Image 1 (spheres, one colour):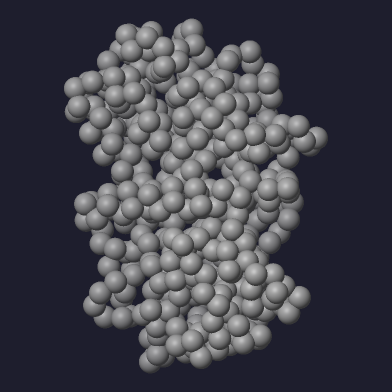
Image 2 (tube, helix red, strand yellow):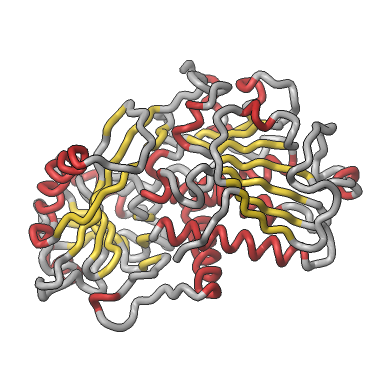
Length: 447
């Protein structure tokens, strides 16, 4: 599944009125909730920086939750296009639990909202003609999937945490159950699996997402929503993808009613925010593994993905992703992995993966990609993302003009739906009162 994107891709529908997205000049602050917004002579204009999990969620929810009569224009900026950054390199293992299978803070809300977006993206992708196929020759299954619903298996590998794992498993969500299973049951799911402590925690409702396919599907859903809303006869909607880099917020000065920063680790590289965000960066390498044709056996059709010291995200009967390494404090955001970096990643990951799934010795390395993630500080609620208005950090006096949605770390897929919805609603209301204080209190942390 792919879209051909030019440097300035525009989806404009009849019904959009006023100045186009290229018009310049500042205007007084307009809130959609005001009567002025409903009678405006130009679209309310928003810029969303980043076309990964966070950015596309915000775009979807801005469109979905804006008043129908509102003339709304959204410019989406990403130098590498849809899902070209760390989001597209994600392994796609989706569940609402910590490594000790404890329900994360706001895990239920995040899980439910993410499932909604997955369904929306799947529907758009199917209508576009890219099947979520899991039929036919087992060797060809899942090649175009958006979501693979086969669960996730979490083997117990550390006797010191076994009690905590057992306790947490008893408090799982009904919509994402955790079953404690033994060796026989686990080998019924993955015949070659090895359990060091003869215990595993199976999440049958957890899913494996194909991030690039999902993000392309969600972008397509946003396009479809623009068309649907504009055809309603009320306000016009407009969405434009700019495949370009924003190196300074000053480039957007006077252009927009609000700017939402969703660029992950690159947020700290914007001069206006550099050194002001309590983020830790971590570069991770993911290896693409393929089962050679001459190997008669293949990964079982019903086999779950595996979450352990090295995780295995099943992409197909003969294709999976293995990850991930951790290079803390890296500033390297390039997805390109050198031969030396790939070799070191395999040396680290293969022994860990083979300890749980010995069949990995038959799989061949076919390539690697890397992503730079930004992790938020630890809090009593875990490591929730960073949200809120950052006018004071940018140094501008505009009311609620600059917003941040970042610090999603390795849980971007889980967090992006619900928190993206909150950010969009806050932007539309010109107030962050709707956002929980747990994800805005980071501004009190000394960087």
